[in-house]
Length: 186
Image (cartoon, rainbow, N blue to C red; front, side, top):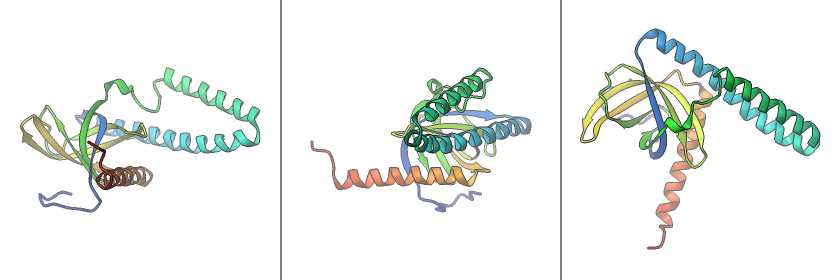
């Protein structure tokens, strides 16, 4: 828990992402969001594993690979029809700069949010266009010129998601260091 002093459990980077958040007003909303995130996280893990296996299958048996891809597409359509698609519509995500680590993130909003309130956040990382969803707890909501800066901690983040975050953060850090070493010509 943040105690007002600077803490550095994990490396932090500033990154440009697409973000959406939703306020979870009560314990029932938090429980519902946690259940849905758990399902989405499991589906995402299965999707990653399936993509790996499908690429291996493509080399061994192109016809079987094609059939497996068709079945996967059919399942995706059914999930979408049942509103179980893996991630919500990207059109409602807003591009913005955030400060992120494997323990939480800070971002600007135009409404005051109470300390202790929980939010569901959806992120789209660039350039990978990888989705990430989680529940965060607001540690502070500081007034800034453009509105408020929310500082948050991830709640109950599965280790696999934390590892995905760390990989992305290392990628951003590496890209930033390369740009510093090799600045673009003027």
